[in-house]
Image: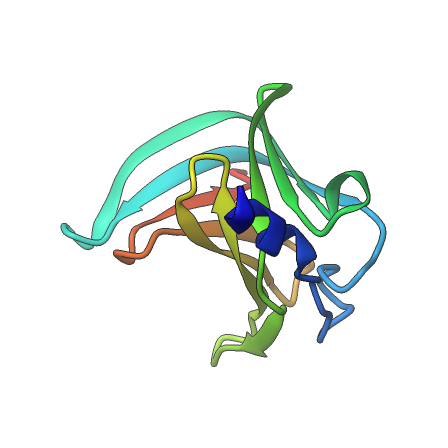
Length: 136
């Protein structure tokens, strides 16, 4: 119980208003596909289509909530400051650390491309990740 109390005391700080993590108001990213990247085989191992909504700064908190096909899937309790950067391809990103309701740690990264599209990765400690994106 103490752990959750400490987690709830952390605030999400903003470094880049372009992507939205720095906003104090809730915002949603909507995606139609999800893929699992397996770091052991260094390739994507599973793809699914559906409706995936990711709410940032959910319910007047700095938490992230994932909805799959309209049903609440999980809440991620943020406990780190937001960091930002960009890569050589012009993709900017913001990331923060969070715990899910089972206590597993994730790095949640929101990426934004120059064309205005975005995708989100929930990265496990072993380097594998779940990626939400829009399939054409």
